[in-house]
Image (cartoon, rainbow, N blue to C red):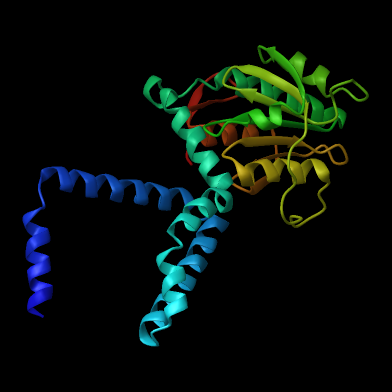
Length: 271
């Protein structure tokens, strides 16, 4: 017992301001990583790994298992190699967010022009029963999905989006991706949702959900069969929207404080 107290006293004597900063920095990094993994499948994997290591450590100590003790003691390097492999999607998303911190300092982009173009095009396409899928990028970069399509790099407009999704046009099959105030690419391939959602939904709706399950993007989809408009975000879909509800939903999700009424007046959007 005295030896234990002496060890604590010796360690406390070495504790200074620099050590405090070091501990706080490590704690902040761990907390940030846990926030990033919260609500994802990676958190379940992390809990499983923790249970395995804690259980193995307890068994090795209680029953004096020398081989298991040796493996646990020398597994630190293997763990460092395995973590980037297991948590590759989450780490990539974290680095993308870190690389986009400039946007947080400069303020969020204005989405009003984009919302007007997307809403107008979606309503016109819905009346004509022309299927469409438009994805609005937010913090998480969509460059991998942009590379699967055709670069456009044009200002968003109702006419442009309608022309892209006109049946049998070269770019109508796939998704349009918009970044801030630009139409970046068309005919992009998106990942499908992990599970088929409830209700009768085709591949276009599953792709709209799939991209929002993996990123923080917002998807607007128009059904070719029914002409219904839907918005997907965070792996959930809001269906059967009319023009007013579509515009209000996009304004609310994208963080704008006001949505325009049909008579030109403005009203606050409640989340």
